[in-house]
Length: 290
Image (cartoon, rainbow, N blue to C red; front, side):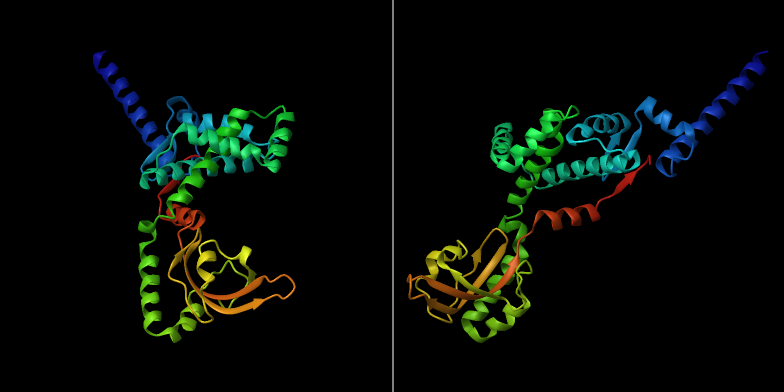
């Protein structure tokens, strides 16, 4: 009798072990084809997403799913599409928080409240707010959590990416270019063709006919003393490092205003979109449940 009980116990133990191996293998390495995998994940809050070394449990995912929908003005009808958006949003949030840690960012709740206040002072955002308040599905707390906070964090990451230490390579490069230009001004045009601001419509590196008011802020007070053909020192803007050359200056007789034509050498600063895409590309991302 005892032998029989031991055999039954052994069979049950083997079954549990095999069942566990199947579930874990399906969850972590397979495509969750087995009907019981998702149920097991629900019961024990097994991880459904891994972002680098951070594991997201099914409980966290379900909570995110339940609340994220309230950040939409209207619920989506296509559940599969909605699920993909939720997963993408959760992964993006985790990645942004990891970037925050990597960049050693810190800020107070007061700064977020100021950001939120400024956001709603914008007329377009105020219209959005009014429309959302008319929607029965909308919750302000969810909108703040899933829309405004990511926008706030993005803005803080963007500010950090302006740091010279994070753009050291381009800063050193443009300083070397400037030193070379000072020794041999004729090489400016070659560098201007090579290092352009691709956000400008021009493909020649030339910025044509700006009024004094429209000049870059970092150039305004310097250009008053420039003669044609003179260069600026290395100047920094929100987008990158610049060396400007004054190549044209016209005075309008009617009002006495000056118009300036510039050529520039431009090396960009890191920006959020390219930095985030590179960070995500180099990250280990795994969705266990699809």
